[in-house]
Length: 174
Image (cartoon, rainbow, N blue to C red; front, top):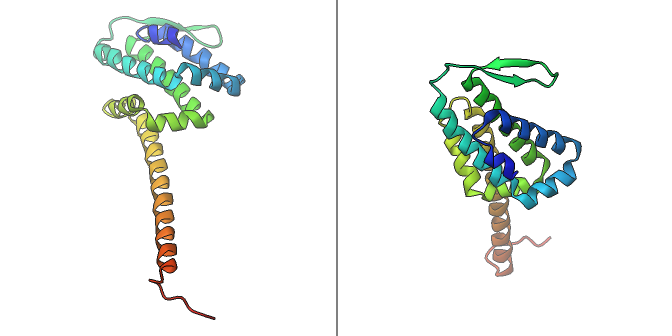
């Protein structure tokens, strides 16, 4: 994870690292989730998304040369820097999403992580990232809504029980 953070500004390298981590997460989810939790992977992935957004914004208008990226089948394809950054960012988004879906702890941390939420809101301003960011922000809002509904229902129930206990509510004797 530290290598990923250090290589966040090198899209080809970060893509390779992220895809490797993603594959490890798929093959051994429990062990990987435990390791990710110890390494505070959600914070690191948020940091990488933020760095990559900044770097992508720098090169957005430049498309003067091509990078060569090796595909999964061993062949290589040529991409513009913009396409290379988009592929790298997409791979980070996929790892982030898979990790949050795989780990209950990651879902909780994503709700409480100011950095993660800040990065997601920053990603809203980028057209290529908007769908990803909006999906996660809506998931966070759904959780907050469910917690609010649960707490309000519990409070109403408690209020009614206290009113009955103190005789403020007429009860029918059958």
